[in-house]
Image 1 (cartoon, rainbow, N blue to C red):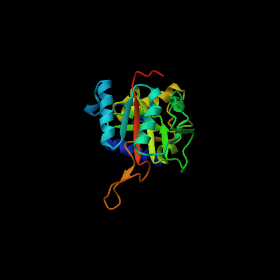
Image 2 (image 1 turned 90 degrees about the vertical axis):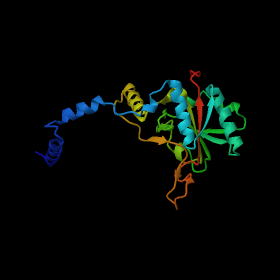
Image 3 (image 1 turned 60 degrees about the vertical axis):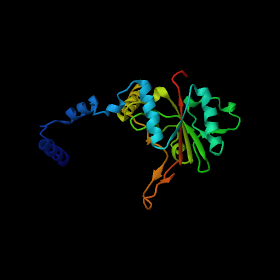
Image 4 (image 1 turned 180 degrees about the vertical axis):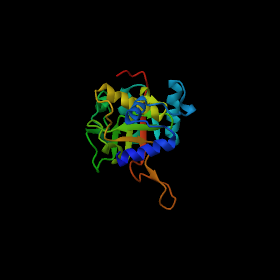
Length: 229
């Protein structure tokens, strides 16, 4: 018996689980038993969306609600203008943002690609919104470079209401289902980021600072379910 097998055997014995082999462990992991869920996310879809907005705003994110993706560029331009922020954007080269008429917002200067240190504003899609805490789940990939989530001081996320789930477990389940549907069951993105409001820290003299490890501003453009694209 190897040292590893002996150690795991002692752990199983102390837990009173008998001589379960690796196959039993793998079977249990494959079942992915559901854990406890907070009651506040057991809501209708409409109430879940409202909870997401309330929790996001409580975490100092700002939210603009629009009826369709066509309105997203105007909402982004309006947000930047009101706050006197640069109108030069770096936008994720993701197909979910291709349908937005960025050229219709004449004040915006748009570049598609990864973010550089000189970029002040980024716009990205999200994999999911999580109503439990008003959190956005972002996954890395060739169309969603992680630099867009961290380098610019202002991060704008375009999120569809249909992408909002109740709890963190729901978002992970969707990610596993996407991997399985692509024929890569069990494969995860290189990076999964959970973003709740702007970056902050209170480590320095117990004073709250925004933008310590990422964007100082986090804005969500929430697209209504009426947009079917």
